[in-house]
Image (cartoon, rainbow, N blue to C red; front, side, top):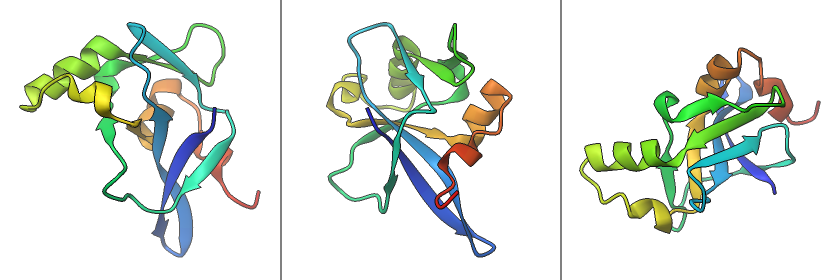
Length: 118
């Protein structure tokens, strides 16, 4: 599994801002290791379907310090609260998370994992 990283230019540097994880709704909790191989997402395009994951749906994984767990029912509830059909999650390609949220959750600097050329 490769995770996607979207970068933004800030002060002349490309910084990882968004983390894109493949959607999987087969389980109530889905755990990802964010130290997995990654690919750069160049641009968000119309065919890219993503669902935002907020801090309330995230928790630390039980074993590895780079594991994060997404609580699928919380994501579905948040979709409903924004006025969309929770089934929309089943049509999405990616969960999208802010790298800063992941760093706050894990209390680790994870940006360095995605710095290109390092």
